[in-house]
Image 1 (cartoon, rainbow, N blue to C red):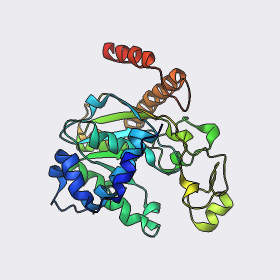
Image 2: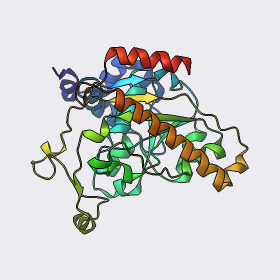
Image 3: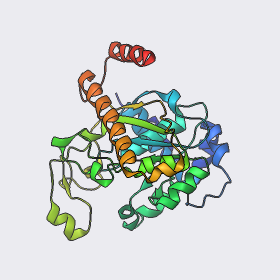
Image 4: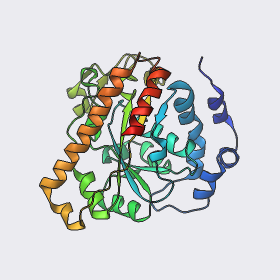
Length: 304
């Protein structure tokens, strides 16, 4: 049974006051603070119940490795991208804001195209995301923020269903950024997003005509009326957060293309292997993983 309680809070007349009572640590960290990238705690508070509903009640996200999410200081979260709509970033944000002792926001770097969609660009900024430029990423890390990067880029969310959980080559820019800023990398493997909107084909001619990165055909899009066409399947999710990787190289090594590409491929392989293991252990798309499997995996990870 799905618990609809969180959705009811969308109708609250003062969402900021509600957030301050429910999550005082997060509220105190960001309330009454200006953000040069446009983050608005009012917008976050208005939409947070919807994403919390998806995280806790609809996708029933199984979060592992939460202790690897830092309470303070800069870090780069790097993971696999999927799902047509970037709900994977939203689920990791919910994990960071609601399941750790010192909740924090995650500043995801978003490709330019999303900022060209009327109304969407402002919403993206106000919920904490930032246009993907090197200068913006450096400034965020300088300010001690958590920066989220999907090195597959927009290609990752548009993968066809037949290629689900097969990582595209990571753009190595995140490694260069980590070395330049002396920032740890935290790999994150996410299972579930590739099945919420099964993408059977990409109509490239239509995508070019309307100026979108891809034009998917799913079970609901474009057949059902709005907003039903955007309702995801209730797939069980699992997010596995790995231990931080500290790249012990001097800053000038960021210009070593061979080294940077090698590290990017190693991290890509690490996440791909984790995805493969998690998929083998999964009992069903809609029921997820057995508790026995969870306990066994936890013991294996503690020995690693």
